Amino acid sequence: MTQTDFNALLGPGAPDEAAPPAPLTGRELEALLSPLTPEAFATDYFARQSLNVEGPENKFAHIFSWARLKQALARGETLQDRRFNLMASFAGGEADGSRRPMFEVQIPQVTELLTAGATICITNIHMADPALARWAQALRTQLNFSGTVGVNCYVSPDGAGLPMHYDRRVATTLQIAGRKRWTFSTEAARPWPDANATYKDGQIVSAAADPGTPPADMTFRTVELSPGDLLCLPAGAWHSARGVGVSLALNVYFAPRNLFDQLAPLLLEFASASGQWRGGPPATVGAIDGRMPPPVAAYMRARLEEFYTQARTIIDNPQGMARPWLDALTDGPYTGWTPDPVQPLPRATAEDRFRVARAAPLRFIETGDTLALPCDGGLLTFPATLAPILRRMTTETAGFTLPDVITWPESATAPPPKDIILHLQILYRNGLLEMV
Image (cartoon, rainbow, N blue to C red; front, side, top):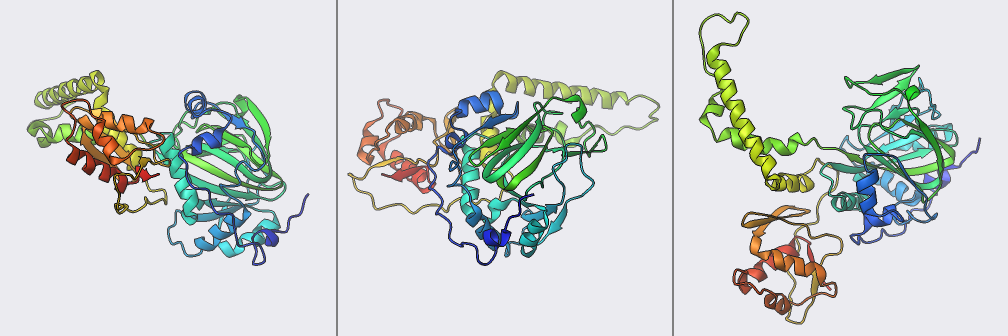
């Protein structure tokens, strides 16, 4: 078994200075998956099947390092949010499970426990690393993912790692340093399971009513990750892992958001508009002797027929779901990331050039006479007549001046120049435009 001096990596004498994080480019997902394209990832792999991408040793050097871990642990000392926490395990990545449970630890114990052979899991490490949080949010934006994206960190000594289990979310491992050997099922035991599960003594341990297929009935693969390698597992895929020598890895998780969260506002708006729905079932007197009273049954039937009609309206016009979906892309569960403050307007001249911000893709959907445009601060609304100008902006890679934009409209319904300038100011203040 290889012995590692963890004090030299994370202790007081370890390097404090880390390379500055690379600025966001708007192509973080592409760089992460290369040579696989983001389109192939979203269509063929994400949440569907496992993906192993080998990369050059320094592929993730701009994302994380031992020095960044040391800095994050130092910041973590002052974090009070319990969603940032550390757990340890003396398990050895057993494929048949382990009786050695995980236990909570404090940051000053990290090097001692690593030296003793424990794996350390830092949950939501992005909460202690602002650059990592912004990077994770960029992935969420570029994948148009409506759930939560966050980052955990795992440090495993030689031979240590978590035993067989599955997660209720998509887990994407980035091998930062050292190596780690993974054994995983080629398919999910249950797609998007309701809860995590472990495997002990031939039994599945899970809070879910249906935990899915046990490991004994599934096909497995084994891969050994080296620095620069990536492994993405769908939610519900069984896996275990153990360090080969010391291992430092990030786990980028994609936690789903139930579609009902997006439907609920529409249903509530529909129900709140009707006195029949607001009042609930009618009051009745008399015995309830095996069947629902006829007035109540008639009420239920009428309301369900109304609900069916409303559902058919949405089915026939799915674009009606655009705003709830866009809301979900921006107003997701808390991840520890906070948007940048609204930017002050620059003192621009007619010669100054602007462009669509490289770190913030311009996404919008037309709904009736308005268009909705998500940004880090929420959902912006503009008149639909601005859409041709927004599309033109995305093609002007060399940038454009304010007079340029004013001359673009060719339709009589285009916004007047004064309104165009106001719309551009809103885009700039929300980080969607930048000066060249």
